[in-house]
Image 1 (cartoon, one colour):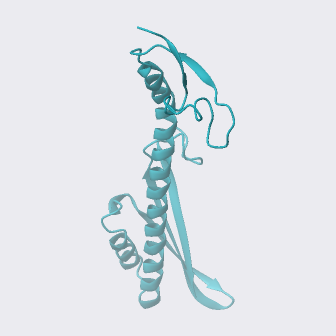
Image 2 (cartoon, rainbow, N blue to C red):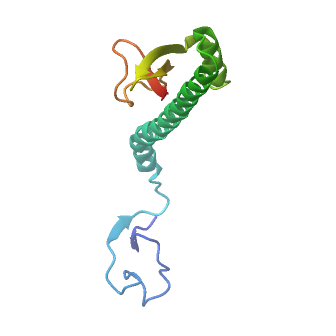
Length: 161
């Protein structure tokens, strides 16, 4: 087994003009390589160091996407409840419409709907508050989670007059 100097990027050694030079004509760094010796262990170590970082980034993006989708759903439920409040001031009907609006994405049983009748500038109005405890996959990525639990409460308010 004979050791030799080889370019790092594996330039064709048969080409005398390109040995040790890159495309810009600068000298490349050369390293001592023994033919037949593998360096796959360093690739495995690098992969093991980078994998947790990429996994946290990936699951963080997924977590925020799910949180955003839940927020849009809660916002829609609040709007649907407010539309029902225009037709009828019955609190049970407003709650039923808002719970039906969260559909297959969220659990309607965990939804809290609070319609409040109020007087705004001399006119009757209704405020519809909707809240939902959203379960987090990775709780320490998302700020603002509830203390001692893996949930974040999502709220939406719609005011009609």
